[in-house]
Amino acid sequence: MAETDPTRAAIAARYAQPRDSVGPAAEDARLLPFLTRSVCRDFKPDPVPEPLLASLLACAQSAPSKSDLQQYSIIVIDDPELRGKINALDSIQSWAEAAPLMLIFVADSHRGRKICEDRGYDYAMATVDTLVNATGDAAIALSTFLLAAERVGLGCCPLSVIRNHLDAVSGLLELPDHAFPFAGLVVGYPNRFFPTSPRLPQSVAVHRNRYREPAAEDLAAYDATRPKAPEKQMHTDRYGTVEPYGWCENTARRLSVRERGDFKDFLIRKKFGFD
Ligand SMILES: Cc1cc2nc3c(=O)[nH]c(=O)nc-3n(C[C@H](O)[C@H](O)[C@H](O)COP(=O)(O)O)c2cc1C
Image 1: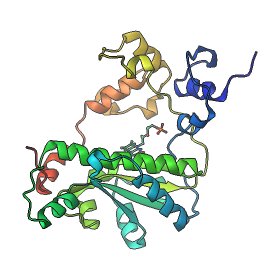
Image 2 (image 1 turned 30 degrees about the vertical axis):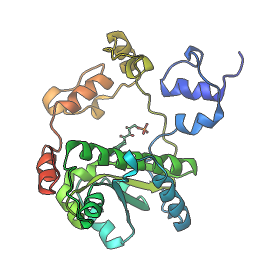
Image 3 (image 1 turned 45 degrees about the vertical axis):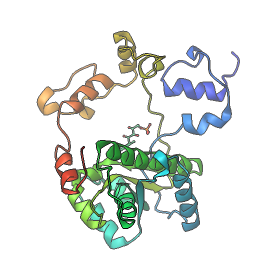
């Protein structure tokens, strides 16, 4: 059998499909870092060199931002005492505690508002649109940092669990009003390889021209690639364990229990507008 092109092999792995089942695909090795990536949850203690961090931060800031407003901030946690306090939050797992570097990506509409008000202009953008734009900017900057870091051999994992402690994290970081911690990002050199996590097929996640509901058989086929053993199943106190248990069951269980229901109240306290 002819050897499979590495890009094609990586696409097959991304969808947990046999290599010979991949349809049209550009065989371009420059795409491999994006196709083969995964989060890292096990880090060596070696620090991330400061010059490399500086360049990765410049990569993050090279990301596009809505209207060039750059409505995000990145907080590098390099004060050991502060890092200890963040690590002590009960949602931070031991592998994240052990990561040599932690960043916090902040959705930040404070800076633009202040620049506007300093010039004596009325600030008119206390809107949901601003909230979405600032969140999007923070997310895209985080993603750009992560992809650049992975490209140079670092491992990363975003941490939305910091939002389980919105008041505590905001207080520790001295965040002003109109700014909230979107996610943390732990970074370091990986201790081991993490396998590719299969994604929904393009027939489900990608639409041509118009939105279409996914075919039940496409979801079922994906489910079969994402089995979870009974001990890894969610909310078994409510729903018990089932077989087979795939991505749809996990998604349904996760979405059936409210998480961070306090977020809107926090945003109101931080004076975000919802006009
Ligand atoms: C915004 C965001 C927040 C995340 N928060 C967490 C988190 O709090 N804890 C965690 O272990 N993983 C977190 N992740 C990592 C995802 O679980 C991971 O990306 C997903 O399972 C797919 O795995 P992969 O990136 O290796 O393909 C987060 C990812 C994103 C994009």
